Each structure stands twice: as C-alpha cells, then as structure tokens.
Length: 453
Image (tube, rainbow, N blue to C red; front, side, top):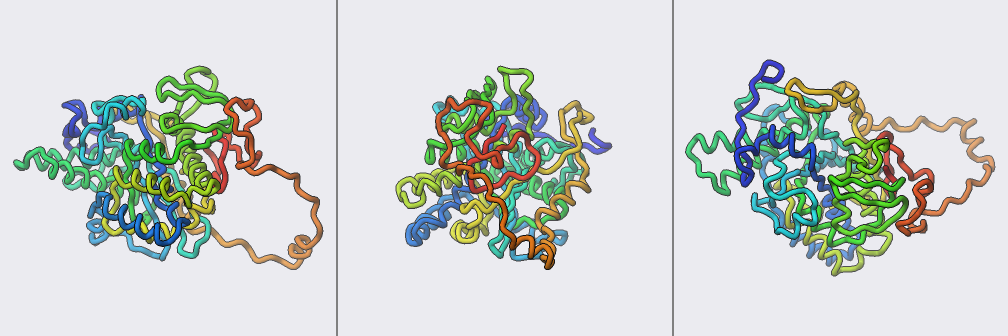
C-alpha cells in the first residue's frame, strides 16, 4: 500500500527471473544503474553533413529504428494535452535494462565493457529523463533534466488507482501490469506480449512525466538502451571531457584525472554513470551531479564532433548513425531527417541544460530513498524555461551607456585550445572559468566542452 492505494501487479521482466519486478529494480538500480543519452545529439548532428548524404543516411536510419504507436494513442485520448505552438518537445528516456530492444541478452564482451552486471541486473526504470525543447524560430534550445528519484504520482496505468513512486519507476510499473494482464488472459510469453508490455511502460512514463511537468505536450520520444549508448560512444571515440578534479569510483569503474582528457567508450560509460567517489569520502556526489554529467556529455560530444569536422567524415558519421539506429525506439511520427533539419541549435551549441529543482532527500513509506519535490515550483520552473520572458526594451540611458567604450575583457582561451593532457592539475581545470560547473545548479551552456564535478 502507498498513500492508501494498491500498486499494480508486478510481473518479472523478461529474462530476469522472479525477482525482476519494480521493487527488485529499485534495489539493483540504486547500486548499478546506467544512463544512455547521447543518441539524440548524434541524430541531430547529421544536419551539417552534405545534403545528399544526410538524406540517404536519414532514410536508412528511419527504416532501421524500431517504432512505437504509443504517442499517437495518447494524443487521440480526450484528455490529451493539446499542442499550443510549433515548437518541438522531445522526451528522452534512458532505460537501465541490460538487454536489447528485443529483450535479448547483450554480447558478453559488452557486459564486460559496461561494468554494470549482466541481463539479470536492472529492470525497466527510466533512469534518464530529459525533455529537449526546440523552438520553431531557431532560438536557443533547452534541455530539462528530470531527476530520476523525484517522488511523484504515477499515471497512465489502466486499472490502477493513483499511487506515488519514483518518477523513473512509471515505466516498470506499466510494463509489469500489462505483462501480467496479458499472461493472465492466456497470451503466450512471447515477443508480441513483451513488446506490448514495453509500449505500456512507455505510455505510463510519458503520461507521468507530462502531468508532473504541468501538462507539457510531448511531440516525440526517443528511448535509448545501454547498448545504444555504448555503441554510439564506440563510433565517436575518443571523446574529450573535462573534470574538475581527480576522482575514482569502483562501482562505475570511473578513474579520472583532473582537467581535459580523452576517453574511450568504456570510460564514457563510467563518466556518465558515476555518482560517488570511493577514494575520498569527503568528495560528495549525488544523482544530481550525475544529471550534470549527462548534460556535459551531450555538450562535449556535440562541440567535439562539430569542431573536429567529423560531420564531413562520411565513414565516421555512417558509423555514428548506424549505432544510433540499432538500439533505440522512437515514436511512429518522428522523422529523423526533419528533426535534423530543425535541431540546428543542438549542433551549433545554442542550447542550455537545466536540472529541475528538488526540495531535499527523503524516504518513501516503503523505505526507498527519494527526492522530495514541490510540484508548484517544478511546474513554474518548466513554464519559465519553455516560455521565457522577453528582455525589457532598451532605454535611452541604457543605450547611451552601451555605446560608451568599455574596458577590454581579459582574453580567455576557448575550450578547444585548452590543454588536453589527462594529468592537468586538479585545481586548475583546462577550461575558461565561465565554463566550469562546481555542482548541479544553474544552467549549463552548450557550445564548448564544460568542466564538471
């Protein structure tokens, strides 16, 4: 019982034994969870490649990706959130499952590289939730990270009364309820049942996020698996990242020196998974710091590929897009070529990332560690980010002052010219001071390689 309501029935996720329901997922994912977020950036990056190549590749990717009808079904419901503008909102869902999109185990060598256990670990939590808002007028895009442990009301599960859980768990509850219902109705435990259960998970997660954000219209979604992240990182490695100080974590396999450094795909997994430092008990991390790592990874990859001219390397771009298409699911109406044409802000660095506020850390009635939230504060923050107030008109006095000569600003080397040695001193990250982020608060700006905790 939670808040006076029964939770939906739980069925074991495919290939995970009888302990694979959401309660099991909470225990396992707290120790070892994965985030898979770079695919959206890589899809959008195609816009700067020559048009003929983009067209041919986008058609291939469009044909390869698995598609889901759940958004079309949600939009047809009477209570559906109407689309109020030509802007585009894309929900990124990164699952912690250690299987592919068919529910099958990954190759053994991939499990070794991921440092996150095998198919018996994890479940169907949306450990990454990010809303990408792309304005139709080409102005700055916004990435809004939703902390995975926010304690919210779960919606979108037929036959279940309202109950509260971590926002990431809506997917798993929807999956389990649908699979149980289908099997109890005599359906075989086959791929058809499995895919129907996955769609139910997507429906519950999207409905829950939509309500939590304040009835935000979701135009499209991308669902990314662990395998998709790793394969994408392989295609684009080496990847340049910047870390404020040396840090280690035996859980994720992280072992980084301070400053700018180049990492491979295995290290990229550790970079985006790390949420603790096991070498220094006084160097505190949290899930919110990991949210910041996600944001920094997207900003770094986008900047690096554009700065290095990777978009004109047809072979490498083919590898990136092939990797993206293998283990993602998108809604049935998402055209990747149109997205690439619209999302110029993502590849040009004209994007900022923000993490939604929490009020603190707490414990749920069943003993789970959660983030407490003020839903009014969350929805006010989302509204401000998606509909920013235009700047006030410039007054005559302000204009006169602006026209006066100003003292020259000190020259700061761009991030791309900063030292790239992994042994850079931890106290002096190789990035301009304006691009160093000590914690998860405030907005992280795209267009450079940011230094983060």
